[in-house]
Amino acid sequence: MRPSAQFRSAQEILETLVSSEMSPKVLVNWGHRNRFAGSKDRRKIRDIVYHCLRNKRYLLHRWSNKESKGDGRNLVLSYLYDHYHNDHLTDFNIFFGSRDFDLQPLSDTERNILLNKFLKREAIREDPVKYSYPDFLDKSLKRSLGKDFSKIMELFLKRASVFIRANKIKISTKDLTLKLEAEGFEIESQIKNRDALKVLNASNKLKLSEHFSEGLFEFQDLGSQQVVNNIAVKEGMSILDFCAGGGGKSLALASYFSNNIELYAYDLNSSRLKAFKIRAERACANIKFLDDRMLFVKVFDAVIVDAPCSGSGTWRRDPFAKWNLSLSEINKLSEIQYSILNQVANYVNKSGLIFYITCSLLDEENSEVISRFLKSNNDYCLEREHFISPLEGGDGFFLSVLKKNK
Ligand SMILES: C[S@@+](CC[C@H](N)C(=O)[O-])C[C@H]1O[C@@H](n2cnc3c(N)ncnc32)[C@H](O)[C@@H]1O
Image (tube, rainbow, N blue to C red; front, side, top):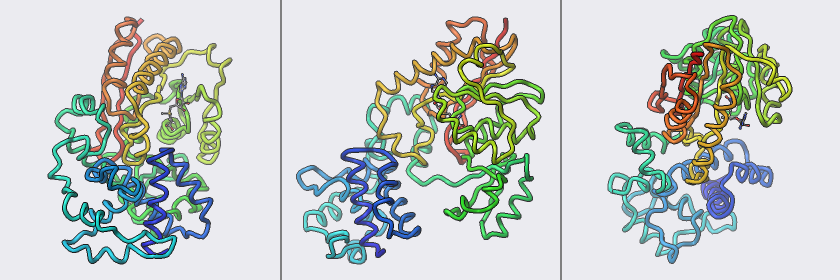
């Protein structure tokens, strides 16, 4: 596809996302309807769409409804201007065309807006516009992130890196690195993290690699791996992963302990365990899956609660989550988080531990939920709290370790 057709496709996808359905499904459906598009085109279109969603408010900041031919088009035009502008917009010509499937040429009004009204990010004073997030989150983000607020929000406007985790049940990190390098992947090891590898030139080829189907590695963000590094459990302990979902945390623990740990997994939505079971089999990870009946007859040395949350720590990889969030949704989530903690409090042995995890940046879902829980459960005390900052390279995560003392 020519650039003009790629940008036109991005325009149409963005229009649907912004006006009716803010979901990655829109991209998937576009892919199904446009099978002619090759993998490079799809990647380019996806990159444009994701960048526009990460930067949505900034890119739309000078377009008023009156002058607009739709937010999809405005986003794409601002994206082009932001990336390739010069004073005369002459370099722009290759991005436009007159065929039905091309990005249509700039109108005089559009040219005028881009040249005379569009501000550089540094010149924008309102933080929610500059860093593209909903207004209602302004106070909460600033309070929760403190002095790192601007640095983190700026980072969230850029694309996330791709990280994988070596499956120690099957291979060492060093041997995996050699195998992937032999296939042409550029690998960067992570000094601070035991099994994480950054893939600098990741593409679809990585998932199609036989090393993946052999279970030698898993895709897992650095932040998610770091949070598992902070789950201080020991060989021989029984551990329940209560919100197991796709199994990211359990699989990393099984790998680290080379299966010398008693791991149980549960999820309220049992269909979410399907993918986990496939991943566990591929990785040769020993995990016992529990259903509702089995849950109530056992207590554990440790329970991991990787709670449902706003996902605000993952906005770089999932910019959809940022625009789907509302104040009532955050309140609803913190109620669910509190009630899950109260439920699992009954599944913990005397002097056992709860590891409460979210991939949220917001105090409302993190320290505030923990304070509320501790107030109403005086048999628990706070052992430690840890925030894994996106400034460390991956997603943002919060971990609180609670100890049962009676
Ligand atoms: C953040 S996701 C878990 C991600 C997973 N641990 C991983 O690392 O891939 C949260 C999970 O909690 C589950 N969940 C939601 N409410 C729950 C509840 N009341 N009890 C148990 N699981 C729940 C959801 O179905 C979802 O799979």
